[in-house]
Image (cartoon, rainbow, N blue to C red; front, side):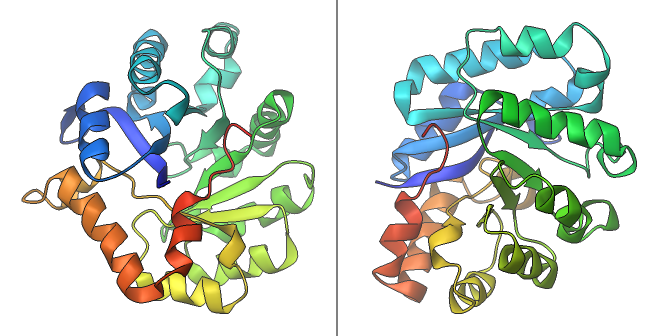
Length: 245
């Protein structure tokens, strides 16, 4: 089993990635299951997001693990969140992205409300981390430490040292490998976190950066690089999924 825990459908800056196209690209690369969120969420077009996720779930069935991408606006107004929660989609995780929505960093009450959604659904919370100041992993250390009953996934694991610090003190954390160099994955393994690494690719966002490489080729190459670097240990990383448990 190969699970890609970090996949997207919907609108992105390079165009529209339909559920069917993304699914077919991943299948061709050898992917058996996906954790997926919709980039269309950033347009706040909630009905479109639900439509995309229903289509993706219809195509992939129980191999699909829908991730509810939360926005500040979704929690501030009465309509959006109840609509998403009662959309007949089984959300297997929630997600925040402070590079897309910096308010998560500046509004602690709103951030706590997002964690409460994960708690209410009894699912993990995915946090985008990156090298920009607004999404450093370390920013979220306090909220993770104070919500030990919630599982957190530090997507991308950036910056590396801050992610390691959090994972060292917070056993309720995982990291996914989306756009992560194999050298960083090796460091996580050497630090003793091999059992808390989730395979992810960020597909098909790769197409915005590597325009001459298809998603199928990109994902397949990423898997091959893992086997070349870690041998049999790769099987455990590729098959691990904490969504929908």
